[in-house]
Length: 84
Image (cartoon, rainbow, N blue to C red):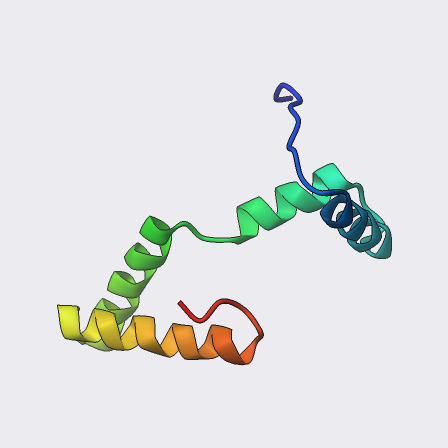
């Protein structure tokens, strides 16, 4: 088991995390662990894009990379997330 640590956040965010955890029948710690492992890093997203392009027989050029980034930005915008 890893060593416990603290994360400073606002009371509002802490309360929201508590509600989300309660709704899922889990703890805030477990919820944060799930979120942290579910989200990909930039390097992981890039590697998956390269692999997907290869599977599709597409050369992963800078143009393809930019089109993909633009598409994801539009998807996030429609989901209410940051567009960039």
